[in-house]
Image 1: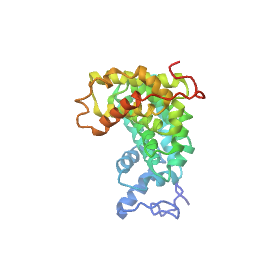
Image 2: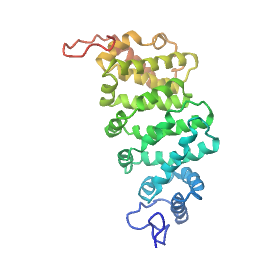
Image 3: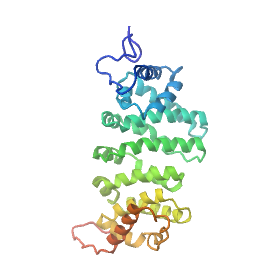
Image 4: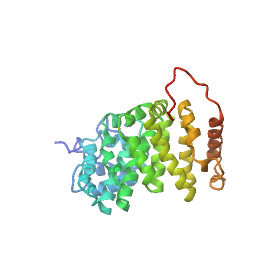
Length: 309
């Protein structure tokens, strides 16, 4: 007779094919297997989510374990879907937010692991998180929910894989990130801008955003608003990603022409000198951006009309 996870009666001792949890004592390993098993039962799931989310940084093979254990990913998705009714109208409690964020933390673990990242994408699991990114409530439970959801996408883009960018470009992630960049908390803005930066750093992503005036102008408008806000309430961490986005946009000839007209003065007049005093890399990026914008672009008659037309 088999357990719900498809393990023999000897569970938590794994059957062949189950990822081994290297580097853990027998007691710790048995706890991990037991908690994974408990995810399949609604009665024991909440405690298992909490314990496993605490362990995700110290258990190297937790992601394959979660992915290959029968019913585990379905249980995590059930936690996510269960929250949909309370996000509109916004009635999410702190307890509900903490619980679903523990499930999201485990999905971030799966998104981060090289053995499970690709199948995670192929299953289109990030799309389950997008309703959370659509929310606009400023309460702490919603802010925590958005930030943790962004963390899953951030984990995907961190490795600079074209497969990830190609997938994201087929979804609405760019407008969702732009909205959070405009109105989220500083931490959410930082993660959302990091995601946009990673999309821009990919050739396909840069071409996509610079393909039409509407796409470019939306990105440039939000970045411009962020610079104006940062001039009043400075954050070196957030400014770093904003400058990197501008620098990458300047690699596109048409975007470079447009940026000559719309780059905020605050990036040119020393407004952020004190903020960037100890940030050599961002100062270097800002200097390179100014250099790029000063260079004359040789017009190619085969190119499309400039983005500012």
